[in-house]
Length: 323
Image (tube, rainbow, N blue to C red; front, side, top):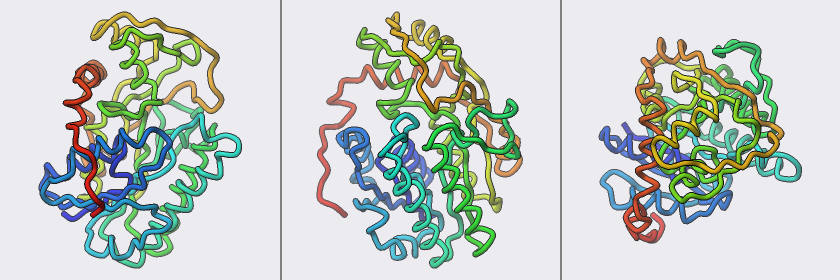
């Protein structure tokens, strides 16, 4: 299979590229290397992919790049690029979220329509649900995002559905639930928690720790993405981890795996849902999705990766020229 991955240098994107290459696929990665968090992390992610057979990389903004030539030879486009983060989406920064989550997705869909892709897989988010009406949450529940970020992810998802029904773009929107694993973004809770435990530094906890998430390991997520691309199904599906865990439970588990954590509590942040839990029946029935990585195993993998010396983790390989 020939694939294009937007957001290829990011946390999930780099794992997806590795998974696709391991399956024998040809992969074209696209990323703007934006500075939402330090681009050096993204360069280290790319260093793991550079030089591998069947991988090429294009650096550029999806609003500026000519997408049709990139998509023309692809079977599937995995659209992961966007502006992440709930807490930064308020105020003046909302314009950035509109551009990178909504306008970019519309341009990707236009190019997909013109090039007749076999499949377009869009990385949506459980943030579209907000404080859901019921748990585990089914896709039929009316989304009620509680953050501007969630609003933009839902808008992009609606665009995918609109292009699917109006123009036949074979779009799949996967609502990802709290993805974690090695190389997770540094602003995310588990990344901060693991770093705090391994360095014996304080861990800022927003809220009382009773807030819960359906944490989903990144390896399960990327397998779900490829499975959805290989199926004939289109539509919207939840991708959850299969178990709901509170932050207090996660902290206690990490203390068993690593070291005691000095927790510094603060008020809950606007836009953070109290609870998420995924009903994954649609994904299970449509393309055989079943999460296989439990929270202990996933957190242990993060601890091991955090303890690897930076030199070994990065490979000390700076990016070569653009390809």
